[in-house]
Image 1: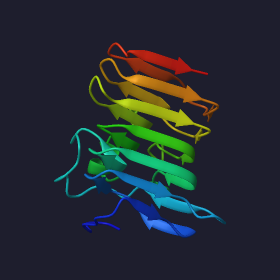
Image 2: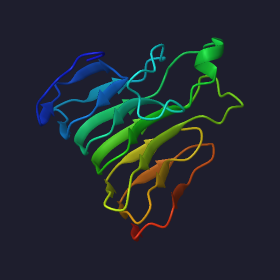
Image 3: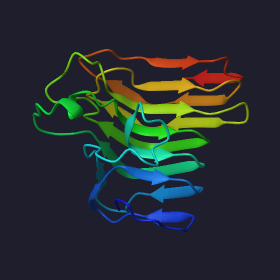
Image 4: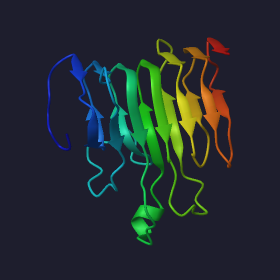
Length: 185
C-alpha cells in the first residue's frame, strides 16, 4: 500500500499485515476483516513529501474525511533502533486534518523502542477547522509514549466514548483550541 495512488470510497482489508505511511487525500472508509485482524504497521519515514504535517510521522495521514471500522490494529515500530533520524520522528498512529471517525480500532506500540527522551508517540492526532467532527468510539489504545488522543481543532464537534486507554507512561486525552462541543465518556 506504500506510494500507491488509489481512488475509491471504501477499502475492505483482509486479515494480514500491511505497511504504513499511508497518505489519504480523498474521503475514505477503511473496513477491517470480518474474521481475524488487519495490522497496519509503522515504517520509518525516508520521504516526507505528501505528509500532512512534516513534524509528525504517521502510520496513516489523512487530509480528507477518514472512517475506520473494526478489527484493525494500527501498530508502531517494533525492535530497537539506534538510527538518529528514526529516534527523532514524532511517531503517530492516525493524523487527521479533516473529519475523523474511529470505531473499534486498536492502537498499540505507538512509541519508540526503546523509549527515547523525545516523548514521541501519539496514537491519535486530529487537527482541523470549525466544521470538523471527530468521533472515537470503542477503541483500544495500549502502550504509547505521549498522549493517547490529541485533538487540536477550533470549534470542532468531538465525541470520545467507550474507549480503553492503558499504558505505563503518560496517559491522557487532550482536547484544546476551543472545541464547540466535546463529549468525553
